[in-house]
Length: 311
Image (cartoon, rainbow, N blue to C red; front, top):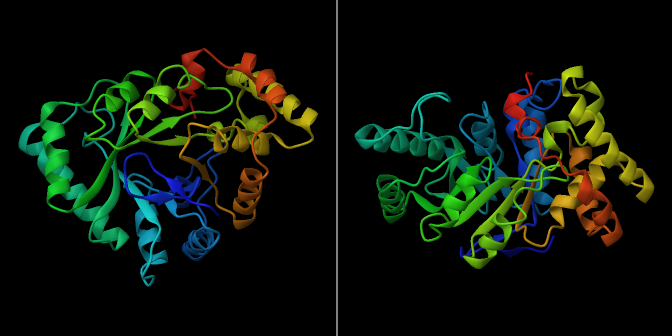
């Protein structure tokens, strides 16, 4: 797999990366349980052997960090284990500040270093921000942790459009931006993608399969999400017209986007991972297919945010 530059960092990354939430906790439509530790470690090692050198994790992904630490503990050269840290103690709490924020970041970083068997986090991302977040205090803390050698590069994972544009206003502090993007959610195209290239921030695309909506699992969605089902089946019809599966179309749509540095995918099976690698190698979708997909974009924000789906 040919590696590519990653924004203003000195990292060379694979164009596709492995997301590991499904290895640590139930996820996707139907909430299937994670695989065994043995199978998870085998998958992680196989991904690295296949050339995938960017693996995305987070402390809130169950035991995902621990699995990665075990999988790569005995390797002199490890993949980039990109983890995350929240700005809150719990999901619905107000953002931390002052000494409480500093201690929270310190504790999270220390725990991640221990679980991942690392001395420095190459990529640490502020996790799941939706609104303005870049306080002067936070900017100073990110700089301090870099100066201390605990974090090489900071990033931000976002929802919506406000937070990514805020992150891109501070490229000297946040060198990496991860956004949700797929064939049904194209909100990032107008402003975020061009701006990320302009300020040379590494762009990571997640949600290619839209938490399983753009896969065979769409048929497991409850009736109250009929809008999602209808939209996904229209995309599936486009895929069938090209003679490929819905998941292949969905992944090629993300992985071959010209603005993308890394397109993430999640899986619990080696066979499915190999299918995604093959899909990437099949190359970009034809322009007429991209044109056909354009009017299928969803604009209902309640459908675009999986946290509102009710399962």
